[in-house]
Length: 318
Image 1 (cartoon, rainbow, N blue to C red):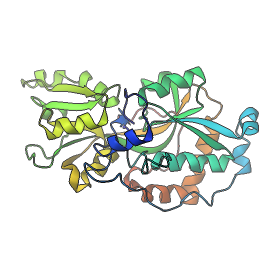
Image 2 (cartoon, rainbow, N blue to C red):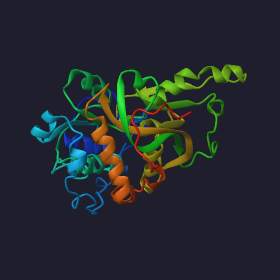
Image 3 (cartoon, rainbow, N blue to C red):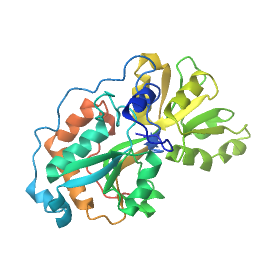
Image 4 (cartoon, rainbow, N blue to C red):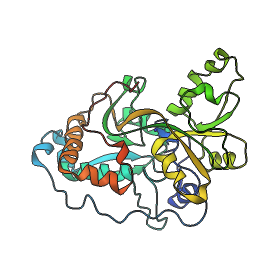
C-alpha cells in the first residue's frame, strides 16, 4: 500500500502537484507505496474539516515517551507525499501537505505533546533512514509485511492493501481474485513495492495454468504509470486500494477500479525496538476511543480502512 511512490527523486511541491494530477498512490503497501487526483485541472483541494485542532496533550500518554524526546518537544517524521487520500500537496504555493497520513500523525503529536518536524522523502529512502537515526518515524502507506518486520517495527493505524485498475473503457476484466486472471497482460506498478514483490513472486501461476505469462513493468514516476495505461502500453495497474478507489472516483482520470485483491495493515514505521512504539500505539488507540480517528477517516473517505485497535508489528495479513 503508496500512499508515496518508491524510487522517485525528491521534488518541489509544485512538481509533486503536477504529478498528483496523474495517478493515485503506488507505494506504501507496495503500500504502497503508493498517485494523484485528476488528469486535468487544479490539484484536488483538501477537505476543510479541522478534525485535530481541539486535541490537547494527554499527560499519561506523554509519560510513555523517552525523556530526551519529551524534552525536545518534537518528533522527526519522514513523509512520502504524493497524492490523496494519503498525503499530497493541495496547494503548491503553501508547501503544506494534507491527507490521511498527515492528519493521523498530527493528531498523535498533539496527544503526546510533540510537534512533528516533517521532512518529505521518497518512499524507498525512508525505511533505511530509520536505522541511521535520521528520522524517528516514517509514513508512506507502509504495508506491514513479515519481510519488513525483520528490520522495521510498525504501529498500525489503518488497513489498506492491494488492488487493480484498468482503463474505464476496458471491459475485459471485472474483478481480479487470482493472479492467473492476468496472464498474457502487462501490469504496471511501483518499484520497491509490495505490489512488485507479489507479482514477481507469483509469476509461475500462469505457467501452472498453461497460460502465457503476465509482464510486470515497474515505474519510478507516478505520471508515467497512468500515461502508459491511457496509451495502452500497460493493461492493468496494481496499487493501493484507497488510492485506486479515489482515482476511480475522479471522472477525468478514466480509470475503473477492479476491487480489492489483498488487505494489509498499514502503520507508522520505526527502527526496530524504537522507544516510541508504546507511546504512538497508545495515542492511536486514544484517537480510536475518543472518536477523532473515525472523523479523520470520514474526512478522507477511507472508512473502509478503519481498524479497531492499533497493534505493534502484527503478523502479515494472509
